[in-house]
Length: 360
Image (tube, rainbow, N blue to C red; front, top):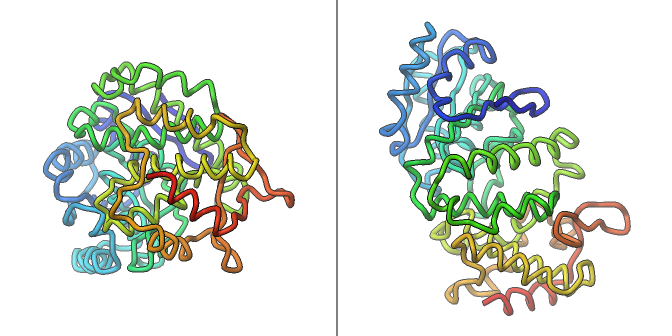
């Protein structure tokens, strides 16, 4: 199935990786392709990706890097850039980012900055990357001050999501992806949340259950991004749960998976929405119940202190004039707006502290 994401298309299907060469040849013609993947994904799918590219008559080379969120750094970006230069990848080259969110963000940022920018194709291999990280053109690196604070908007020429690749995804990473799917339902489509009433099939990686989830989540995110490509307005609703989540990730040293942090963040921010009077009673419990059914955490680990989380949140990209802003739901399927029409809401620091103290 092909989904329009504005200036590019997303191919979703079982066994779609075999079509990579033909997709790339049509959507992103180049003299040479640099396939950037973390070492784990390179071992699993690197040969298949290169085979599809060469089968389409394309020249490609694999550039693996060490696995893990802690490798999404300026140092690793520099190392990959130097490797592409040594391989004489020119401005007529392109990047294929193969892997989860780390490979997508890092590979996309290499493409955005290498020789002042070369094209990129995203080939996500995790659920979270398929429905979130690969869609929308955001790329970035983590720095000591926080997550994704250095980056660029660099939309891909195409995205290929092969649902069969999820068969090798460990259960915690699969659940992590489900957190972003739940987010899509909370912010934009309450009816979509019915898919989580029987999460066993999703957690069992059944393709018949996962494929419609991948398709609907991509439709939701692509529809929002198409209206606000550079996150100056509506696209900010996609940050629901992420203000708290990014602080949790950074403070935990990325011991928490992104989706686990987002799950906890959504529970905390739903609590804030109720406490602010933006949402009716019961929203927090409803969000927590859905996430618990997906085998996701809903409370802040005891070793992550409120003071430290608040300090990290001050570096969040949504901070304005020293005040932390949140994207908050008004009910399942709809987001609240500030009196001035903004899609993020200023929240008093005392209320934020109360939420972080309560969600434990």
